[in-house]
Length: 285
Image (cartoon, rainbow, N blue to C red; front, side, top):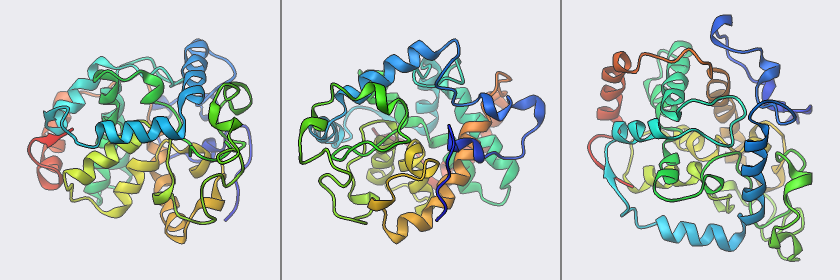
């Protein structure tokens, strides 16, 4: 598989969107300048210091009972009205709007895949963790495997990991670290955040979406893998087969962001129908 190179390989993936609905692609995921850069860097510095093997294992245990809250999908979407993602250099508006923007971008491009539309709505709902008491560095931002050395395309890799104790541990500081070659991403411990949490919520509540949807949810923030071409040494054949789906989703996650916010009230009935089809009722979070 071709490894994409460049300052930010995610810029290669871009859907056909109306010019007035999106910024120039070169201005997305700018981690070198911009009005939000200090906020973004601080979030990643904390993340890359504290996301360790032990931390991730503790969080998986802490949230593994899914006893924090009972709510529907749209109630979770509404919670995100209160959240502005501190790791995102592109937007400074509540995350709930981004959910509908992403879903509508997918709906326009893939009108025959209603399950894919729903993935757009669901993908960031794990960020409710930030409203359940977690700091944003343990919720948002690009994800990466813990238990092995960070690879080249991890954001701010060279300036944010100095104080992470795992990098001083010989078990975790090599390219493979605690993993076997091609062990499969399902056997890799990812940094704790909204991707892994929402994936686990969907599994626990037996959401009836296809495997591609679960991959998109679980790995959509794993930019070093799906756009940086890194961590291939950990991938199974299944991971590589699913990669194009995650890349297709990323187009809409990234390039539908714009300040023209959707009319959510008009969209809710359509998405409620999809929720009733694939993940109805009250879920355990």
